[in-house]
Amino acid sequence: MMGTMRDDEPLTLDVATAPQAPPSPASDTGGPGPGPAPWVRRLVVVGLVLAAVNLRPAITSLGALLKEVRDGLGMSGTMAGLLTSVPAACFALFGFAAPRLARRHGPGAVVLAGMVAITAGLLLRPFAGATPVFLAASALALAGIAVSNVLMPVIVKRYFPDRVGTVTGVYSMALSLGTALAAAVTVPLTDAMGGSWRLGLGVWAALAAVAIVAWLPLARDRSASAARPVAVVTAGRAAGERTGTPHALAAGEHGSILRSRTAWMLACFFGLQGTAAYVTMGWMPQIFRDAGISAGQAGLLLAVTMVMGVPLSFVLPPLAARMRSQGPIVVVLGAFQVAGFAGLWAAPAAAPYLWALLLGIANCAFPLVLTMIGMRSRTGAGVVRLSAFAQSTGYLISIPGPILVGTLNQTSGGWGLPIALMIALVVPQVVCGVLAGRNRHIEDEL
Image 1 (cartoon, one colour):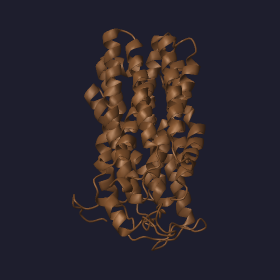
Image 2: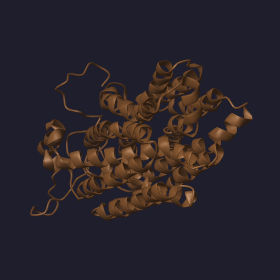
Image 3: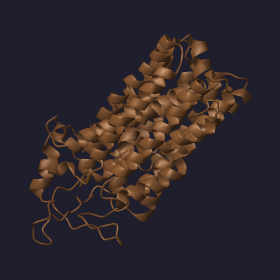
Image 4: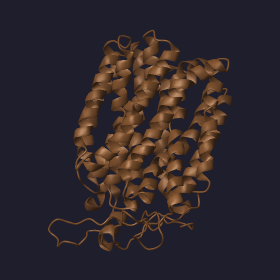
């Protein structure tokens, strides 16, 4: 695993290709070689939580201070839109590299490197004197977020193959908590430190540094390397005969994922919900401020939106994991999204907390799609491929949205056209989510 890797080699991540019996609920073993020790699994949960807390403050802290950063660096509306699209661009670019890095060094080592990159980027960003330098420092932090984003579902599948929904809910809840925390306290912290947006953004590097400590002992851990493919009974075959044969698994590992309709629908759903999320995180505070709401209250409203993910991210993934199709959840979240954007369009200052609440519920499409990624493949290797493809392609899809919103706002002089665009995008988002939520596995399509 630590040697060189050819481009035509199958995408695997220490996953046994021979069929094995499914693991017993009472045991951490069940495949060739020992399973992870209980203390390792507990440490993985702590590491997942600390990593997840750091996957959004670099973005939402900037959203709360976007006006100050624009004034300080002399950004136009289009350039500010580009800045809000940098996360998606970095997530796409570096997300594609995550599987190869994980093959060579192990997912724990890559996540550790991601936490180091986040810390370094957040430390460097306050020293930027011009927009290009600020973008470069942001890109460094976002590169670390990108590889960690892709590998979170992989690590969950690797260490907790029988608890995908529950553990996904735990780290999704932590992600929402970190997002909300940065949105809520960035402005007050900035005011307390003299009003400098540079200090207000740079302080979040300390939180990322804490996560480095947790991932140091996990960087070399290989105790879950003998992850077992999940045996699945196929209709029409005799009881006990499984599709998880070497032939079926080889097809899933070697076949081009571009041929999977489910993978494409997941990527499109991921991209469209990501567009809405980044427009919300990057532009919603500005919409409220343009409506006459103070900077502090606008940051608090963004925190309300983000904090909704804390309880819902804990409830939604286990619920979705128990359903054969996740389409109904997709439709409900889409309805909340339309209602929230419609409120921002019609009267942003009339009921700002209601609009923030509705959009916060809609943003829970993110933990939902992460859960679906873990459910649409039978093996850990399949989840690696699907997570990298769906997230990286999805982030590519989401890049134009925030830029277009900033451009439309600058050219039209208001928020009517940008918000109308976001409402229109809910339709393809729901369609793709319903199709991605069908009870399918990518191995069957490859």
